[in-house]
Image (cartoon, rainbow, N blue to C red; front, side, top):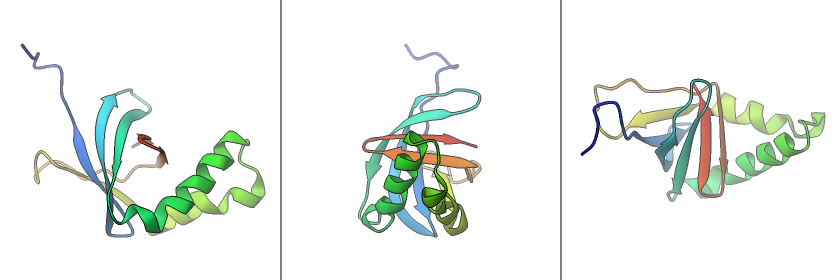
Length: 106
């Protein structure tokens, strides 16, 4: 039996208005939400940005790779809920996608 306190959340992820993937909440946290990531056709166009951003995070954000995070923010990321059109759209402050894992901070 599922408790009322347990919620499964799913979002469509858009970058620059283009649908790029689906997020499925795995671990909610106050600062970060960890999700599984399911790429869709639009992911091919933005994956290189996220790859550079992931490399930058692993390397302590060297100046020569900071452009990727800025580019992702400039394009705009929206997480639109699958369950309800009335639920709020999330525009995450930070979002990382690495393989089939994603994490975001609202």
